[in-house]
Amino acid sequence: MSRLLYADFVKLRKSRFFWISVIVMALWGIFMKVMEYIATVSYGYEPPALSSMLFAFALFAGILQAAQTSLFIGTEYSDGTIRNKLIIGHTRAAIYLSNLTVCSVAGIAMCTAYLAGALAAGIPLCGLDGVSLKGIVILILCTFLMSLALTSLFTLIVMLCQNKALSAVATLLGVCFFIVVSIYVTAKLSQPETIPQVTYTLGDAGQAVAVSDESTPDIPNPAYPRGMERRVYQFLESFLPTGVGASLSQGTLASPGLSCLYQGIITVAATGIGISAFRKRDIK
Image 1 (cartoon, helix red, strand yellow):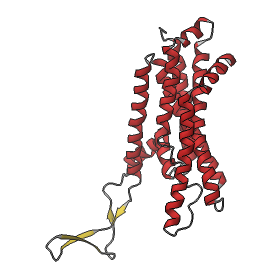
Image 2 (cartoon, one colour):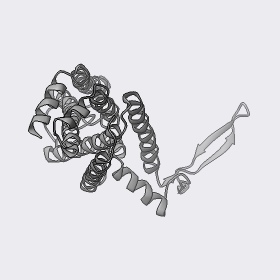
Image 3 (cartoon, one colour):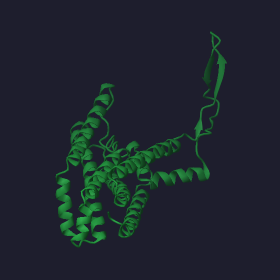
Image 4 (cartoon, one colour):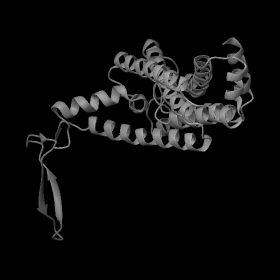
């Protein structure tokens, strides 16, 4: 196992895509904090909190991780590396875990690069006053667990699909689909429970003009999810890795502990299923 890890980490170190992704994430983090500071101060407001925009990357981090995982493992299939590893005596479980470990480290490195860039720009501009470092550490932990869950799912797909192009398409389309789902879920949960009651009158030109009377009580919002529907949306937001990413990016993560638990369950379950299925896979 140690030899597999060493060889795979050497391969990762030589990966241009990995280093380009890390640099892009770091520059993105710097850009987001600097632009937020400029936009806030230019309107005469106080500098934003350090935690603001610190996790803006979380929703879309899975796209780079999907590409990294599919390229890293897909190349092993296309070059015949996995078959060679089996021939020299490495077990399938060791090969699977080695690839999962290296791809997980790559994903966490990308997340860390953004956080490092954002903090490097944010601390001099925004300072540390009023910042709950404990809260930020907990959210960073959630981000890393989200990254692990995503990588475990991508590894499961790529290790069972020997076609490099097909696995890349499957992972990228899959993560994009769940990003859209998570955005929809977050939008539904952010709906206000009530909305102002609006009446319409005719204006001078005969057009309809909306008039809101503050003395009129608000009415229930028909778009606000209630009962079982709301519980389903809340579960999806906490369970889906992209749901956690959407909440982190908007600063609305309600239950960090529960989200971390779900991400751990996904990681363990996907890894167990992947190893079991890979053992039965016919390697060409």
